Length: 70
Image (cartoon, rainbow, N blue to C red; front, side):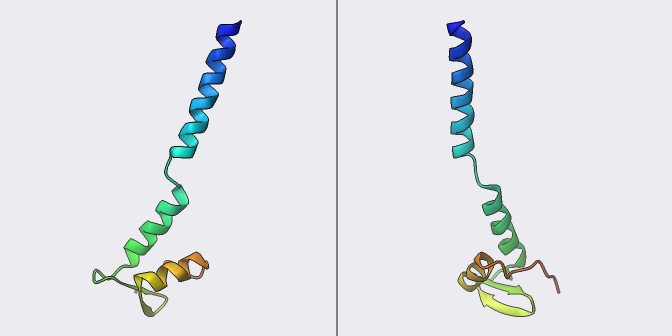
């Protein structure tokens, strides 16, 4: 009985640690979005505007950056 409790506790602990150490999917999605809109020179062209990568990150953090391709 004690062995089963220890196994379950160990599995739960490993699952919790794995969840904490796994990469954030939302962060990956945001990074991919900026990479796709990048013009290759460090600028981002989105929504008909050209902006620096830093400006694009700020706009993305506010939720105002959309996937638009021209």
